[in-house]
Structure formats: C-alpha cells, structure tokens
Image (cartoon, rainbow, N blue to C red):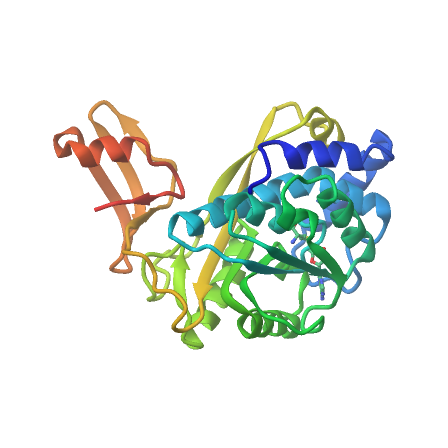
Length: 324
Ligand SMILES: C[S@@+](CC[C@H](N)C(=O)[O-])C[C@H]1O[C@@H](n2cnc3c(N)ncnc32)[C@H](O)[C@@H]1O
C-alpha cells in the first residue's frame, strides 16, 4: 500500500505546528546559507530542533520529490524491494519516497546521527497510512556504524556533501556491504554530479551493474562545464512559501543520481538513451539532447515521419528515457 498523494505534506503541517513562522524562517535562512557551501561538516548541520524543523519544512519535500522520481523509475523497471535501509536518512524523505514507489516494501530502517531529526521522522511516519512507513524504525548511527543488517534497497540521499573523503569511502563500503541495490542522490550541481561520478566509479570497480541514469557503463561522456542532472517538480505549500520568502507555488528540485545493483542481483534493463535537457518541441519535430547506450552524448531529433516513435517522443521529458 502506497501513501496517498499529499500525505507527507499534511503530516509535515501537523508535526510542525509547534514552531512559529519567524523561527522556521530564521532557521531556513541559516540552512540555505550553509548548504550553499558544499564542504564536509565538522559538526552536525541539523544542530537545533528549529533547524531540523526548518529542514523538514523546506528541504524534505524537495529531497522526497527527487528520490520518488528515481525510485519510481526503478519500480517501473521491475524492482520490488521488501526491505530498505536509509543512511543519513534525517527526517525520512527517502523512506516516504520508497513507500510511494514500491508497494512491496515491508520494513524500513532509517539511520542518522541527529536524534532530533530521527524523532521528527518518527513523528511524521506515525501519521502515515502505509504499514511499512508506520512501522519504520529510526535509529541513531554514524555512517559506517549502526546496527548490523542488510536490505534489498540501501539509499543515501543528499548526504555525501556533508562527508569527508574517508567518510564517503565508509558510506559507499556500507552501502555495498548492506544492500542488493544502492541508490544515491545529490544536488544537481557540478559538485553534486562530481560526487555521484566518484560513487559510480566505485560501484563499477566493485563489479556492480548500473541501473540508472546512465544507459551504459563506460566513462561519462559529458565534457568540462557540463554535468548530468535532472529536475523534479515540488509543489510548495503556503507554509513552505512563507518560510522561504518565495512567491511561486512550485520549485524544480535539481538532482544528480546513480543506482546500482550488486553482482548477480539484477541486470540493467534494455538500454534506451537518457534525455539530458528539456526537449525542444516544434511542429512535426522534437529535438533532444541525450546520453546514448554507446557511451556518447549529443543531439537526437525525432520527426513526425517516424509515426509511433514521434508520438512516444512528444510525451518524453528531461530525465526520461528515449526509446530507439
Ligand atoms: C542534507 S541532510 C539529508 C537528509 C535526508 N537523507 C534527505 O534526503 O532529506 C544530510 C543528513 O546526513 C546526516 N549525516 C551527515 N553526516 C553523517 C554521519 N557521519 N553519520 C550519520 N549521518 C550523517 C545528517 O545528520 C543529515 O540528516
């Protein structure tokens, strides 16, 4: 059973009722400033209850949207995990996304270093209708530590930028030791992409198979000044707009990602090209920029003359695959 549309938004509104708008706005401004500087965190960034609440109010809907987009693609590819561990899971965005993507999910364990984030995560899932979410466990653990255990799916979303090089190695070791399928997401910035490329290299070096977004397993073809990233639409609640001082009723969360399967667990699906930018749609023509199964990247044009392929291409967007 999946959480109904909007359930996380309602849970957030209920759980954050005790915080005043100025408190959340001030803590949001602190977090925005800190997250603009991607560098290892000497101390936990979510260091106060106000910061944890602000994170949940303004960032969690976005990290949830990015993870949901990724995990739904894996679900469409036939992946149906029963168990999940989320490393650096904070307030549980990836757990909500996984519950939204996989109705096979039975057990969820969220690990993080910040007790207040785990407590809020627990409070949020207590308001969920999905049994797997309601029974999710939230436990305190540092990357590389934590209770023993493996899972069909191990995730780490928006964690790498806070880690040192040694901690990143520990996180990747942990993902590969615990998981059958590993999913990493990072901000869709040049440095977020660079961290994803490092992780991709590590997965491949250890014999893991790439499930996405790349349609190949050779080196990334994107040149200097370009980076592989996608966007997920996030509808902003009125509260979200207020604490961020934003007018628009939505934002587009940019993210980079990689998903990989342990040797022998799952073969990559038949490879289709990956759409790297918003397509340009003109009368009788759709122009894409794609990453191709042969490991190259460049333009792809689909014209009306191609019939069925054109009709399919017209519905495809940035981040989707392009058949043929
Ligand atoms: C930007 S938040 C992301 C939270 C959540 N994964 C999401 O997508 O919304 C980064 C999280 O990583 C956790 N974290 C950072 N370093 C950690 C470490 N060494 N051990 C455990 N958790 C860590 C932080 O406490 C924080 O909750």
